Length: 462
Image (cartoon, rainbow, N blue to C red; front, side, top):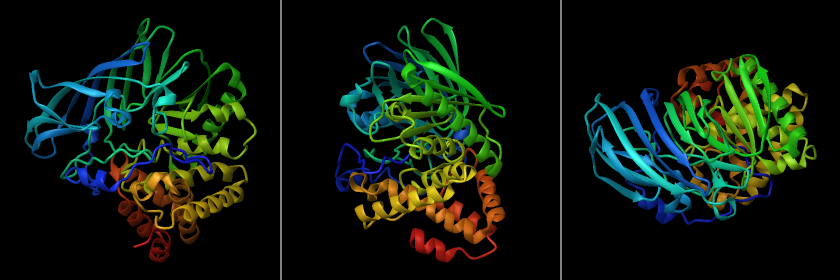
């Protein structure tokens, strides 16, 4: 996710102490070295009505890595109200089983599976997509007259690492931690609306679409009405830009920046693993952009103001393109260790500006943003978890910008060749997996010709 604009803050404030205690039996900060998600498959049927009603069924196929008396699913939209998304039934194979709502965003489903057993678990769900003005968070599960954003609009199996990795959903930062999976989706939408999604979309009849994708960390999905589209290619990658007719110039600029960012990052990190990337202008709240596998959402206010902000506008797309490497491909725990993907995506976005001889400019921006973040939150550090930023105070400046400055210090110490070789190795070893900060730091240290311990201690803390 792109950092919030300078001075912005999350629209909600929650106390975290009691909430975290409630989740103590579910929360884990450890990360798995095993790639469970690559063996997962989601078969989804989703129907969205004109009034915002959503209903559907998901069947998840996989192999249990340990003995499971139950499976834990996340319903992230329920953080904005239980009516937004709820489970209405559960089946293992064709036998109905018991399920329990631990709290609105977490459901435990009875599943007697031994380690190595294949499983097939079906959940039915229903809810209502709120209007943007009445939703919380970043507005990524919301509808307007021209866009319906359906982030995590279905039950998602929580990752397993000796216990289920599940956290409270806070109104700032990214909440999802997920394994990659194959997706097949049967989607029904209101007349006149078209879907833009992770994977590929095929219209099978009016208002009905087949969506398919491999190795998706989640299914990104938005419905748009009255939009225009432009296309371009970045090597083998087809890029599509969707925008409202009044924003044609900004839509073309977003397309051009995205194509160039893919080319720049590929030269440093290796060619992308994706063949399709969509960029869509939508109304958001307190966020400049949001990433999904194969899909980028950008706040339409920046389109309407284009080209008045020559730094932030390209920063949005460069940052979200970088997340196709650091999030969509190499996963991490975005709640306990948000810096692992956000700081690395921010630093990678700087390579776009470096290609335009603007690296000094982006460094100054990071320095200013980091100083502002530290002034707003004197207790948090770059490697702090999301819950150490009450109300989101200092989150973008410290985690994003401060983290990018850490990577710049590491690059200067290691030298270009060793630094980028280390990032390519990190990508290769953890592609389609969930990596930890320790994994990343270990590879940097192993590839560095000079010690890095002092930089890690100074920037990230003990």
